[in-house]
Image (cartoon, rainbow, N blue to C red; front, top):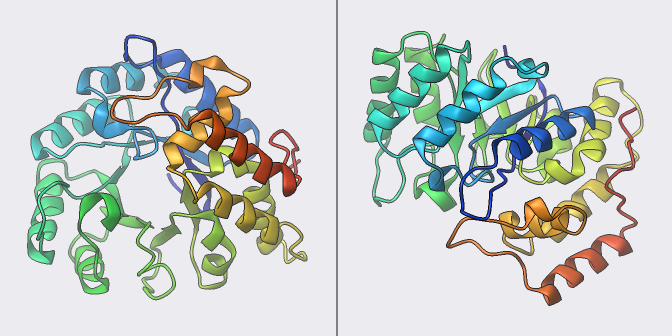
Length: 294
């Protein structure tokens, strides 16, 4: 069962023919767990989930079902279609995955609280044992969750709606629901969120800031002086100056060419921008492999 902690929206790696590189994707997720993360979500926005086929998602799910780190692995769906969501979730639940990060259907503008409530209600009516982490990301879904919508969903489905990833940042420091896991979508909001009662964070950039983020989380819970939060925020601010998927893949591709492939229409940073990114991180004395969580 999901608990408080620092999680990554995991990266997906691809072969030259744009097929999902299953083994490399799992290897990347495993490496971030070993660096201190409490868990990794496959098929979130950072994982280019909307661009990956249902069949490839199912193949990866079957591969991680017996992995030694399975208890740290979580799933998004990255589907707009209600039917595709149901199909993928039912398949994953056969492998004992129970918790899913689910964004409302994107593309169409003007979605209402009533319509989004109906979307989640439809999922729960078909899959009554599902546990859902709501995904609030207006930039991608063109819909922003209101406090009343989340409250009403939890009131109606207290065993099913267990948390929220807030990447619109209009909920994490305001909404107070007992036994509800609230995760801001950026580690720059991690410490503030913890002070406000949040559970941790689910972030794209924790693929890189895993150790720093875990140190901030542990120091908060151990009531230690915060020594790394300022640096953590500055590193996140550097990545926020670029498309996050492009920046993360460009960053990792310096050491490993398997990160060089992203799915169209996404592209890597130009050489100039990649050098700029690295120079900015070097000025912060940011060392990826420095394990502060040990």
